[in-house]
Structures are given as C-alpha cells and as structure tokens.
Length: 264
Image (cartoon, rainbow, N blue to C red; front, side):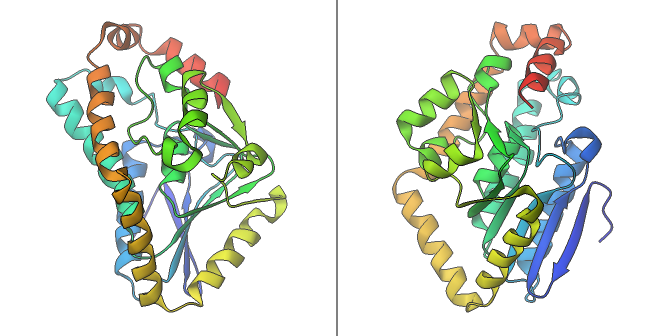
C-alpha cells in the first residue's frame, strides 16, 4: 500500500505506524485518517504482525483534528456531518480499540483533543518527558469533549471532570501518576522504549494475547465503556447544533483555531 500522510515501519513482528504531517503537528485530516484506518486494517489482517505502535513524526504526536477542514464538513446537513464524524472518529478509533493485536501509543509533545482521543484507545501509552495531554474542546469549540469520551475509564471520573471542565493541560508525569500513561521515558529514548515494550508483547503467544485483549476489553464493556462512548457521541453531535458552535463556524473558526494553537 502507498501512503502520503503516514509511514509504515516493520521490525520483526512489530509494525510501527507513523503519523507523518510533522509540519502540521500531525493534525488529523480526512486523508490522514483514511490512510491510518487502512493501515490498521492491514496490520490486523497480517499474520506476521503481533503488536503495533502508533507514533507521530516530528515534535508532536498529534495536535488533533485538522480544524482547517472543519468548515467544509460542518457546513452541510446535520445528517451528513453526523455520518462523517461517526465514520472518521468513532468507527476508526473503535477499530484500534478492537484490534486483535495490542497497540502502543508512542507519545511525544502534544496529544491534544483528537490526538488525546486516538492515544487513549490504544492499549498502552509510552510517553516522553516532554509529552502533554489536553482536551480543551468545551473551552475552545463550545462542544462536549472529543467524540470518544474515554476519560472516566483512563483517568477516573473526578479527575476527568477537572481535566475537561477546565480544559487543562496534563504533563506526562501527572498522566503516569494517575495511571493513564504506562511509562515515561527520556525523549531521545522514546522510540527505543516503545519498541522494546512492543517486542516483548510480540514474543508472547499471538492467540493468547488476542484472547486476553478481548477479555480485558469485555471487562471495560461490562463497566459500560462502549455504551457510554456511543451515548456521548450523540451528545457531542447535538452540541454541534447549538448557537455557540454555529457562531464558531460563522466566524470561520478563527477563534477556535487560535485557542487550540495556544494549547497545542
């Protein structure tokens, strides 16, 4: 497969998928997300791949959705907008969550909004010392968080409320302290440490690993994860019909872009 916005790297039974728009802080355009989904589908089907790393080229993991494209997708009907976000955000993220192989997010710099969302549907997160996480959507976009509300499951309910209500930026050490990040490493060793973790996973029985991941995800589903995600997505989309959100669109999203850049 030929890609323009991502890169594929194989190291034994580990496949590393790189977001490759460093000049845009790996902002997630429609084209990048389509390529990313294609790459994950291919990794899932490849019997030689036993573990996957999701990484970002450049200084940042991902600054989130490409807001330069947003007016193009929200200017039409709510039906078309709903279908677009359901496909490119919910379906693609849950495909990573449901992947039969364990997925490690290798995070440096910013993991903001959509970048935060995609890192948190991975099984594990290895972060560099300069990494930080933020979901400022309620503050910057007049909308109810990102499309997938994994926050109560990855950081606990009360911490999630603080993080979201205030639009806080959380550094890697705090994310590790609350259990959202598995390991924090020096920035110059990030790729090496993520690969070492992935190789250790790849050494295990692939079918046993697949069964274990299924059981762990089912445990989250028994706690309401998937139903909560789907319910929140509807709430998130309802927020796009409000006057506050529509005013952002009418203003050309300049205010939202400025606020997001101040975080990312």
